[in-house]
Image 1 (cartoon, rainbow, N blue to C red):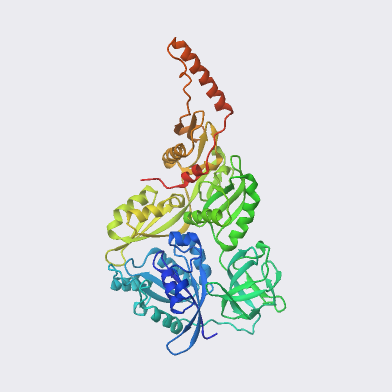
Image 2: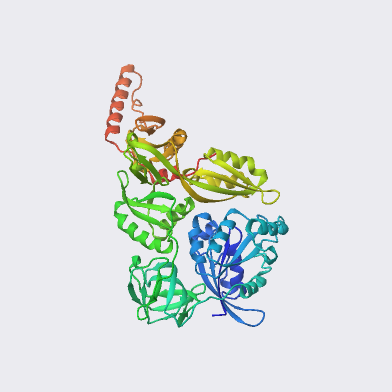
Amino acid sequence: MKNIRNFSIIAHIDHGKSTLADRFIQLTHVVDERNFHDQIMDTMDIEQERGITIKSQAITLPYVNSKGEEFELNLIDTPGHVDFSYEVSRALASCEGALLLIDASQGVEAQTVANLYSAMEHDLEIIPVINKIDLPSADVDRVREEIEVDLGLDSDLALLCSAKEGTGIEEILEAITDLLPAPSGSPDEPLTALIFDARYDSFRGTIISCRIFDGQVKAGDTIRLMSTRASHRVEEVGIFRLDRAPMKSLSAGQVGYIIAGIKTVSDTKIGDTITLDSNPAPKPLSGFREVKPVVFSSVYPISSEDYQPLSDALEKYRLNDAALVFQKDSSAALGMGFRCGFLGLLHLEIFQERLEREFGLSIIMTAPTVQYRFILTNGETLTIDNPAYYPDPASIDKAMEPYIRANIISPERYMGVIMEICSERRGTNSRFNCPIPGRLEIQFDMPLAEVIYDFYDRLKTVTQGYGSFDYELLDYRQNDLVKLDILLNGEKVDALSQIVHRDRARSRALQTCERLREEIPRHMFKIAIQGAIGGNIIARSTISPFRKDVTAKCYGGDITRKRKLLEKQKKGKKRMKMVGSVTVPQSAFVAVLKSESK
């Protein structure tokens, strides 16, 4: 055990975590040059296409240090985006140390600070690493100062590297073996293993990723999952290379996988403790904190026949993404579906893309919302995340929405535009801090509903990519909230309803009506798209009908002949409008989610 090191790489998004992991894999010869490619640990197509890490991935690296000692380095690569912070916290619970990676040109950013605090909560040994020192804009001295001032770490311990060029990689591996502690625990104690991830294989069942804290497990053992008390016989154990590498056994301190023919997906819970059925541990490990979704959206199958496949797909998906929360839901317009909770809008986007790619499902998602609280005149408190359950306006005494504290770090030259977009989003109570010259930290209290749409994209745009954003939930505050309904030919489409602030209702209604007008195809009759608060119409857009030229056959003659034909056509259109239904394509629902173009 003294030659095992379990560590994570944590950083703000796009600071080079995956590139550094690539260099570790190359240096330890886990894969030959012919089979190597960039972002080799990002196994999903979406990760490769977008250039971001979505899932934390584990790999065991064999390394011989400068003294000739052989080490087993268990690396868990983590995502950097704020929406996947739950992945980071689960990875950190399985480690004893972390590399805190900082971009030499960007410096300390919001998620760098958030990830540092998360690592400190788990009492990890932290090694600061300054990456991208090869860039012309790299300013190592400024970043060292930020490490001292912003993070409170010893900048003299900071290692310098360029993951892209491969300089300084050997020194980092040496520091991991020298500075990070070996795992504690005993192979002779009863087995306790923490499940930090899992995925479903249609041939082998659930493949569990776990960290062994005490004891050992081998093929043939009967394990017990402590939360469900279900017992399963172990078929295979092993460690992670790029593929699974079977082993005779897994012992205390190691990170690996267990295959035990678990066919029932609901038996496996992320954060559960595995022990032996014959010699169980006295109590389970502490597991992970419960995830709190902040963005809610309903998902419906395009075809009602796909409801059961969608239900099965969500169960399997949740194995691989423990941050997903869902429950059954129904809509008059879209039928049976599920109400899902996410950690942010990027999380929602990735969920939608993965469902369609990995499970081959065609789905419709409703506009995202947050959880609102309504105090009724009879004293009852109602918490809702679905506009369909908006209470009768006459019975509402107070309407409250969740607020966040937004923490924005940016060069000070962008202060004006940041203030502007925060004020647009009803930001209040601004506070400023200037940790070092030229760099500004701004805090705003803002409604969460104003952030989930396109705030992060807008911030990146106005700050030319230099602004970074992190947030924490504060409390619920009273506001003037109304329900905005969208009507198609006078009929409400409940899937497009939104709860908005009264001051923003008209602009949101106009934007939604305009988007729908662009997306809904023309019909044989005129379609009126309206935004309404109660019985009050506040926005309207109209889709013109297809029109056949019925007067084409009239060559001259009395004008009344043409009028007669046009009147006949008008009556037919009116009758068609009464019986005809408006076909709303999936792209129309997606278009409403997209950010307002500015």
